[in-house]
Image (cartoon, rainbow, N blue to C red; front, side, top):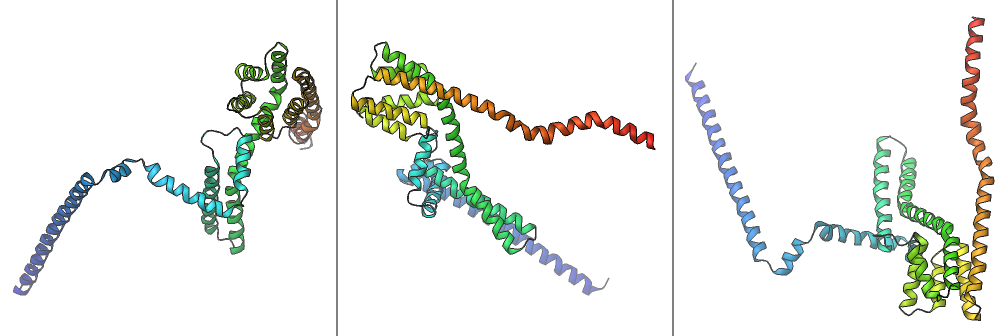
Length: 310
């Protein structure tokens, strides 16, 4: 090997050694700098005022998620109409004001659902190589579904709760009538119904009692109870009690009439539901049950006939 090759190899080795030394020095210096920054951050936190320490000690949900939720609520209020908060509050009253549900949270969930589902639908449609109009249409439709999803869930919860209230209303009125006829006052009779019954109707009577105990008049409390529901029977009961209080009619007589009427209506609803069963079962019978019976009964005959002709 010539002397020129030895000189070239030596130069390359020297350059590699020099580069390796610089990299080692750089890594060590970077580590020292990172350690120094960490120590400085710790010292800054230790020397920080109490307000900053309390802010850093707060959980992540309060420091980050809560402000983000407030921004979503602000965007939702701009997108909705001015009376949207009142309508959502009325739906919450119908649903029994579930724990953790309030107007601001519903508005924030509407915006969040619209954004998340809209973005997912947009990304999915981009992967399908669809046209621009179809991408915009599908994205807008899925975003609208996400925007309306909290309202749908809230409406469903309210319907289930009011169905339970409608079924338990005659029994509660019977207990209320018996208590009043036994000599109890109306407030004491309402307290007995709220204590001895369970379910959403007992919660409504408990709320009625609390409003009367804090100084709200009986008529105003009954009107408020009627406004918190969409059940026609409960509304008529509240209206009858308000009229009885205004005209001085004995409450026991009104309760007796209301109780008998509610029980008659419940029996009529049961009979109506029973008469709807044949109509509701007709389509499953035609499209699902009869084809299976035909296959089981006629299938072997068809197979045997096909074997004979072969």
